[in-house]
Image (cartoon, rainbow, N blue to C red):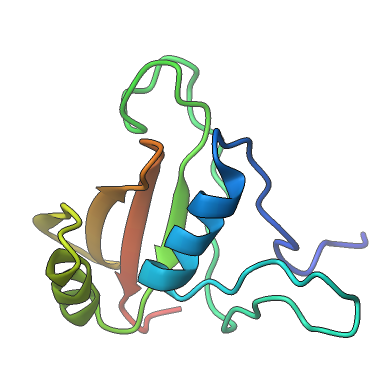
Length: 123
């Protein structure tokens, strides 16, 4: 069977897409979408990706109307949390120990949940 090789993009609606794209660039290091095919888009590092549909009635994403949530891998969760908090962005660190790594949660300026994940190198 032929298989996909990874996620090629994450597309979602935003009230102010230009401002929100800049927020992701400034605070999480995700490059803006190129305006030319001569420029390569943001490239992520190879690593594990979880593709997980959730039950329709889950409260894991926050508000009931929220239909998606992005989980972003980081090398050093503690450093990323300090950087975000230094920019006055509220971040909730999950203090639980998980076999697959450490987690934290924040929201972008439009209220979309973002989960940060520092994987343990067991994959």
